[in-house]
Image 1 (cartoon, one colour):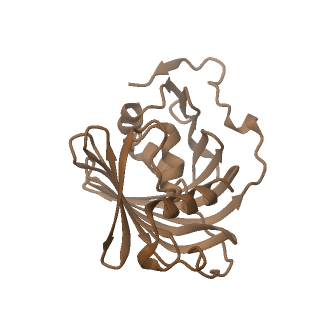
Image 2: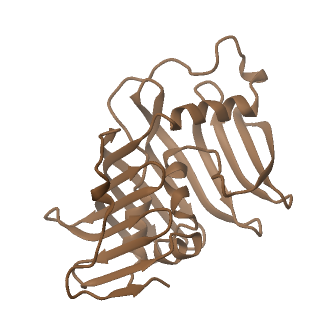
Image 3: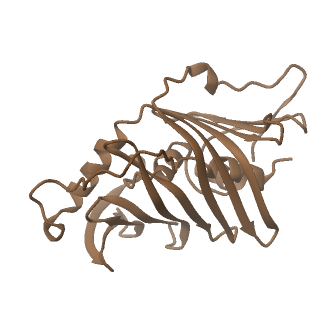
Length: 269
């Protein structure tokens, strides 16, 4: 049996990475005021930061609250460009109680206590059913890390910039004229503050609020805390990071997950 709560806890711990480095000065382009900064300038700043990340390793505490109750767990996260992902929920004794590995074409999940191993496509439908996040596998890390540009698979036809309560609001419009995503950015520090991802029908799919920023490098700010609302599950998730490493040089072998001998592979729904 696949447990949505366990899977979602694992994937939602992704990426609000933190360190103890002091906050540097504003990264707004020199000589450019808040009022004349363009949407493309904001996106270019996020692009430059994101390119600094080759791989990541982190440990986090993740808590959820829903009608089913409140839960807290400790998890590890490994990510490598362009789309390799590994998540492990840790037991009280530090052993994985669930492991998830995904790449651009396949997602694998193993539950040691149940002796259950699953494989399927890393698309939005599968992830929404398994972990609650209606995102493709390659979208998860960038979005939860605070990288506000939609993935290349999403057809953005227009981008609008406006001011909303002192923040810069970027609105991403699809080819059909539908609103795909709203992203609020601090115009001084060019830090993400909130992202709303919408469904094709215009309903909220994911609502993420970023806070407590620290810098893993002078030009690589990451939020220390995430507050996530998943309307379709009526669930709130909070993330607190205990440790994070930027570009630790992960081996590709850590992103391999196979069923133990005698364990059948079952298809993901």
